[in-house]
Amino acid sequence: MDIFAIVLKLDRIISDIFSGKLPEKAELPELLLRLSEDGQLLESFSERARNVSKRVFGNRVFLRGLIEIGNVCRNDCYYCGIRKSNKNLRRYVLSEDEILSCCSYGYGEGFRTFVLQGGENPAIGDDFLCGIIRKIKKDLPGSAVTLSLGERGMDSFRKLRQAGADRYLLRHESADEEYFYRLHPHPGVETGNFMDDAAVTNHARRMASLKMLKALGYQTGAGFMVGAPGQTLEHIAADLEFIAGFRPQMVGIGPYMPHPDTPLGRISDGFWTLRRKRMMTLGLLSILRMMDPCMLLPSTTALNTLVPGGHYEGILAGANVIMPNLSPVYARKAYDLYSGKVADGGESRSGLNDLKMKLEAIGYAIDWSRGDYIKI
Ligand code: SAH
Image (tube, rainbow, N blue to C red; front, side, top):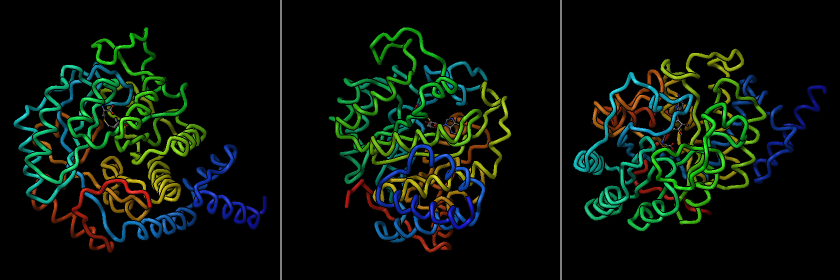
């Protein structure tokens, strides 16, 4: 195809995405490839996405205080540093007091959303969590609570929702079933009991869980990693199609970061250079912003770890959320999802000031409101 035809085609694809329509399946991988290689094209995507974002959110970025409540996990995801088989890790679960004191510290700094994230651990019971959610809601009025605790099943999701949880992050990890099982062990027999200690994640259950969360009225977050070994642009195209159909209110995407104590951390994939992971992540943020102008779209810690200043690149590509870490220092070290995870910004006044100044430098400011998903 000559260059003129390519430009025309891309223009059509972009205006399709912009009007909420994904291009033909066959066209997506080609577009993704170009976005991950062509700096000029990426910049034009970024600019359009940024304008969309500005139209909906102004120059504001929502902050969420992240509290890593525990790293005990029954799953054995091949990419994740807190996988069950990793023995080189001190396991912890925060106490109710620790969690609440992280939240009240954050509240004092201005945070109005608290994200309780952790490994999939049935020993963290519903009563414990419901008590904490109720206390946050009562003692820190006007706060939103987001959970990110893996698959817990309908009963648990319902109880937590009734206790006041507003949002739930559960990345689908991959819409492609075959690829899902290159990231996660193939499960044994499905017991049907989500809180069964021996139960491990599987693709059908992951998808079913996302539907449950949405049906229960959670603002629901899906998402996936970019650039894990063996991931193809066709896989990413399938992820975008899934998102276009499922319409999550939030999407978490970030570059895959190797962790040496994991099976995938020892494999390298020459296609996914650092530059490509970075460009692809930014390009995807822009596509997602154009797909749903109102989407809550974090510029992730993983992106900020991959490239210094990654948070700000993400914002300029259309993201509108940053999640500073409010966990106690010992937990931040032990919540070791991947190597070199940077975890700052929220825990100290100077971290927050730094964030504020760097946002100002690119023409943005912190929005201290709850920042719910509002369809306009
Ligand atoms: N147990 C919860 C929270 C898991 S950690 C759950 O399953 O939802 C949150 C996210 O971190 C995961 O969804 C995964 O996509 C991401 N993650 C884990 N390991 C990673 C790695 N090595 N590189 C980049 N992201 C990773």
